[in-house]
Length: 487
Image 1 (spheres, rainbow, N blue to C red):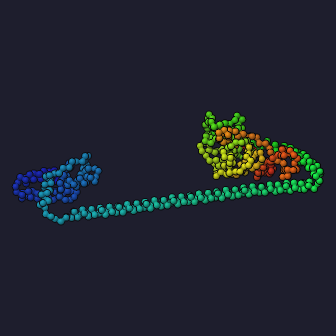
Image 2: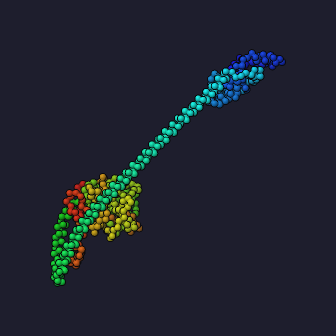
Image 3: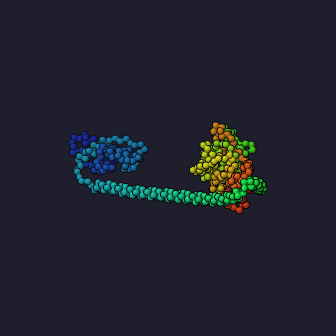
């Protein structure tokens, strides 16, 4: 490296050389310095356009510019002195002239051992760089393989979960099918028993008719009147006896259902006696609360029950649309929801088009003829049954079978107004005992006018328990487990 003092000497020598016309004196002055004074420490070659920075060290202009371009901090490559601001680089013309003269006068020599070492160092550095690249490639390859393995694990887990879900769904469907088959078998057995009873009654009636036919016409008339009077007398006694017995059962099992105004949708109006509800098509000014329906115009009863059996009747009259049944206490009452047993709804509906449906998923269409004006709802909580009947004729409409885990509330939906055509209310009534005599299919045995006094019989499947309820009589039941809850 060339120091400041050396540069001063060189400058003086250059002035002497330039003032002396003899070229030999310049050559001798340059010869006083060794080659190391003219070498750039960056390129290891004689200076080309040399520049001198503040620390006193000199470098080729291009070498120093490239060096600083590769480094953020600006410092001297030789002494490592750091400069706050990048120094302005200007060519040292004196040193440049001396370097050019030295380049012209020095003999051409082969590269010395130091330059060979530099080349070897450069080769070594590049080999090391190649090794680093190879190592980096191996690391990336390992990372990619690890990601592939993780993806395979996730995919395998998804496949396993899907297969498990599929098995669960298939098992649930099979269980439901078996339960439905058992229910159908039970119903078939009950129907077969009823058919046998009817055949037995028919046989007895045919026998009575054959006995009557063997007599003369006059005798037939006398006997028919006698039989009719005796039968009416016997049936009157039987009805009186049954009425007293069944009235006691009614007092024990009948539930008094009252509507909860706190649950009613704002479109609904509940009567003061809590027995009627109608759609007003006008929002009522009622306080909002978590238990009030806000999307669908429904209302619940205050009463709830978690065991036992109960029965109540609702007058639907000539309404065009309505919904009845029971729901679990924890149903969703806000926003939109699907009415089905899976969501805690066991309900029957008459739709606007005149179609009766059981609200299952999908819905179950029902064929009812004639249209009932009064519907009975029977709940057997231990057996998991919710049954619907035409209270006037005793015809069974539909039965839900399920497992109840929550308390149940009676459910009512009067339907939309439909321009005032469906303005009539739903009316909750106390159920009345309805029986029927085991009358024969031959109406000729009954006197004229006696059909007006015919008592209908409402059939409800007997509960499978030790409850002493007749297997053929109505069981409108509720026990001491029923409680009233202010909703």
